[in-house]
Image 1 (tube, rainbow, N blue to C red):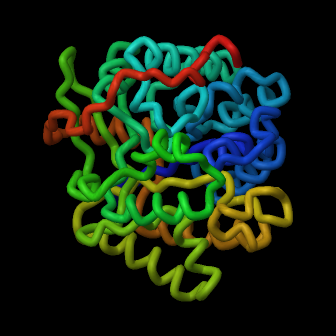
Image 2: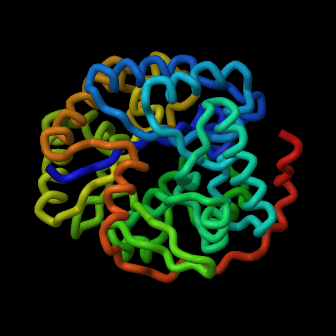
Length: 333
């Protein structure tokens, strides 16, 4: 059976509020204490191990540390999801990127006892400088690319619903990527960097048409037709098999929590579904995935992939100016 991988970007409540422009995010409200037990219980029932990409700032909070340690104790992989979870990471200077990555990995290791070996950028934010720094820090893979043509549409919807000033929108002008992202491969490859190569495992999209099928999208579709949502996800799995794509499926915390359990995040897709129903539907989708693929944490998936000869690509990110954002103050949080 072909392999696949599963990962959850552990974006906390404050990070969604911050990206959305909501007041009160800097008090760092959290749902980690609700989320982790519920997800670990579900994955234990499904006998699935996966990767949790952890935000470094959350790993510094004493109230979160016991729950983050539970992830490692349950046999799951931990990855680096940046320190401050700012989707404009690609605009940072080289020194700021180094600080962001290293500070996050140190906090994650302190909370879990495990040093991350993989990275995913917040909001799929990445740059050649990020990749170079990952390689220099000894990372084995990046998982930040999202090959879809629908990024500009998602960004337009986000801007319509967010409470952002013009300067805030400018920071986020690359959120979810551009049309050119759809031209990137669905299959893994190696980035050719100045000091070596780094494996890239994209977040998989529907082969050929490149539409997303990570579960936030599928759950949103299920609001209108649960049958159609299951059929779409099943078709995506079959299309991946036919195309020889070993999928890397992305999860988000709010795929497991509903509006009846977390308030103030109504802008996120499908938050009007009860949490118990979401978890039931997610379990169904993952069973479909397990019928088609052997599900692994991302790091194990990459280890299998890396045994093969992979295509090599030069970084193709748009050039970004050196950071001048006065909001970046890594020592202040």
